[in-house]
Image 1 (tube, one colour):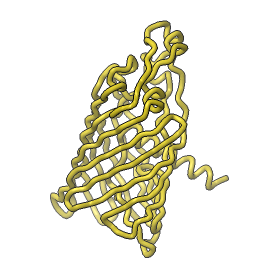
Image 2: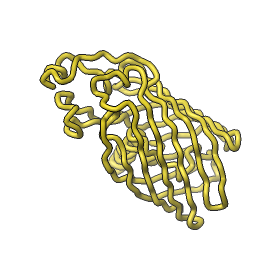
Image 3: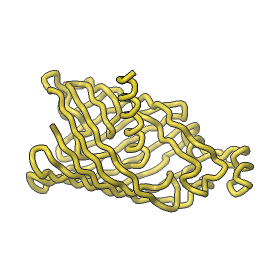
Image 4: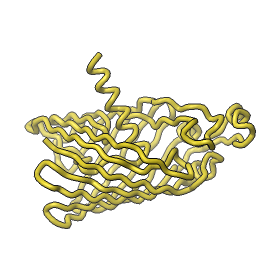
Length: 261
């Protein structure tokens, strides 16, 4: 039971990171898989300004937990979920992982009145990441009872000094019609429950959003580090045209302090 509770806690925390765009870059998001790598841990916490929900007109402050563990091919944590990296090559990783699809509560914003709550849902997926220093590319696929989505990204890693590194990148997120309907669609019953404020809307598959991301990691010592990040996301297609969407673009800002041991 304790193992199940720990796994559930990690998944719920990773759901926050993925859903709010506040995934932490202070840890290696392309983990090196080697049987000789001993147990490695990262602990930390911070704060983030994130949208109340995707498409909302305002942001809110949330606490950002950071916990990462890696042992050889296995990894688990709040930034990457729980997974296994099959690669033996440092600059090319591929594997499977388990994360959580974003949840949403109706009471987080008055504009969601009548929509009801979206509970947590486990997402099973895979990833392929590669580095061509200083460039990198990332890709992932995730599927749950809410639908499926594919993320593609790429960018540039810049080393400013021994203590400072900057990562700048672009990400595209495609989702199928089931996923889009889950988060941006409005059923006839939900429209009625909103008192007619929200019109019925059928969302279709397409590129859900495009995001520009910038992260600055500073190392205070061999173990202590901080990460400051900002991202600008623009909704597209059915997500942009949804009656739930009050603002087509959103800015997320986060700051986290962590310790590696």
